[in-house]
Length: 351
Image 1 (spheres, rainbow, N blue to C red):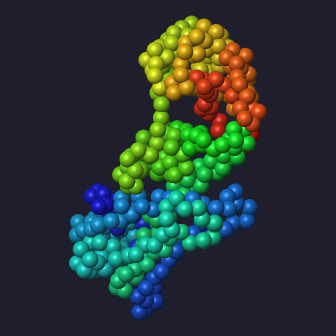
Image 2 (image 1 turned 135 degrees about the vertical axis):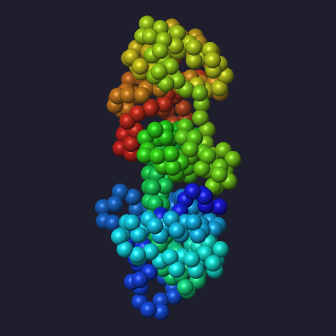
Image 3 (image 1 turned 45 degrees about the vertical axis):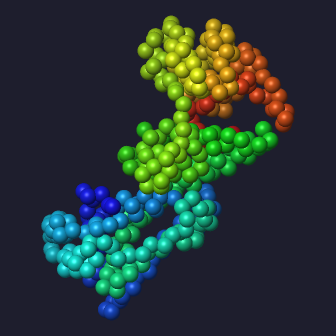
C-alpha cells in the first residue's frame, strides 16, 4: 500500500500534466522502456539492476488516487500554470473505474541481475486504453532508479577488485562479502537516499552500519537481516579521555567488549604511535589474549590509505609477528586485523 501522505498526481514533472492533450487522436496504447544507455568511454559496461520493488511497493501499489488528492492537484496546478490544464476529468474516471489503482503493467528483469548497458531493464505499458497517457506519467518517479542501480553497480566493481586481490593473496574468496563495510548513512542527501543506497550495497556485501538500508531490505524485500556490524569506537569516545589517557580509552573498549570482534579507531592523535607504543607495547598482552572470534580490529581513519596501511602493517608485524599463508603472503595473527576507514574509492582500493 502506497504511503497515505503521498500524492501520486504531484510526483511528476510539470510538463507531463499537459501531455494528455498532445498525443494523436485514437491513441490507446503507450509502451515505454528503461535502459542504461551505451555510452562511449563509460566507466562500466554492465549495471546491477536494483530498487524497483521498493518504488512499486512504496508509491505505486494499491489505491493511490483519491478525490482529495485530485482536488489537491487541481488547485496546485491551477496556481502553478496560471491556467486550467490539469486533467481533472481523466483522473476522476480512473478513480471511478479502477478504484484509484493505476492501470499500468511493469515488466522487469530480476533485481540483482547484472545487465550489459543498452539492454532493457524494465517496460511500462497501460492496461486500459482510456489511460494511455499514464504510461509516461510515471517516468519521472521510475527514473529515480538511477541511484540504487548506480550504487549497486559501483559496489559490485569494488567486489570484483577485492575478489581479484583476495584470490591472488589467499587462494580463496572466503569472507569476501565482509570486505567492504558501508558507512555511507551520513554521506547522502536524505533518509531515503540512505535506505536506497544502503540496500543497494547489500546486493553485493553483508557488512554495513547503514541501518536505513537494512530496514528497507526487511520491509520491502523480505530479508530479515541483510547485513552485520560489530561494536566500534569513534573519535569522540576516544578523545573524551584526553590525549594522555588514550591507552585507558583503548582499554575501556577492550573491557566493555571482551568477546566478539571490536573495532577501535586509533588515529585520534598519531596512528603510528598508537600501533607501536599502545597496541604493540602497553596493551600487547591484552590484544594477544583475544581469540580469532574476538579479534581486535585497528582502524586508521585518515591519511593516504596506501601509505598509512603499509606502515601500520609493518609496525604490527614488528610487534606481533606474522605467518605465511599458502600463497606465500604475510598474515597478521588471527586476533588482530585492520580496517581502513577513509579515502577508499575504486582507484585507491585497487592500489
